[in-house]
Length: 260
Image (cartoon, rainbow, N blue to C red; front, side):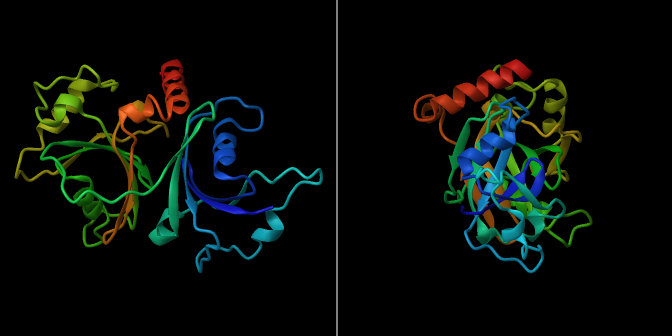
């Protein structure tokens, strides 16, 4: 059986598996007993991936089928500083899994060259986890957080841009009707501190993350990058979610309402 390598973001890890991406996503979210555990989010790595950092020499002896012929579901190859040591050129599709095991593939798309002049909300996914309000667009935000000349930085960052609705252009008076966040007043206050051309470009909204976010709150998509390059995974439009990806979208919303 073919062995796949996956870069998991929830939690950060490098995992070998005999399961193809759809089955691996279901397994990560529900286990073998098909009970919902939570979101799974992972990148598929290019076939034949090699590394001087990770010890992959025994992958063929560790990731082997069970005696009854069943495929090996998962073998953890690394759980520390994984994203940092995976080259961006080795990363392929992003796979999003609902708590009940529905899986959606998102392929890389061209990174936008321009963004609307508005405020942004980013959920950092790996290796840091704060929820950040920012006046920086995704590309500038990634370059800032991965700038090793700064006192606080990381080599690589994976994050998702979340919807701000009317707060994106008017933090204090804009509509929050469709926003699912708990402390809207605090969010408004954080955004209001980010004055145009002011000294503060980003503000931490929440330092605590429970390794879950609402799929229905995703705005532009997912980003992973360093100070020189950024990969962009555009989130499907609402029309495509409600038609082309209806089964995944309905399962995502049902699960989020159930566990909200």
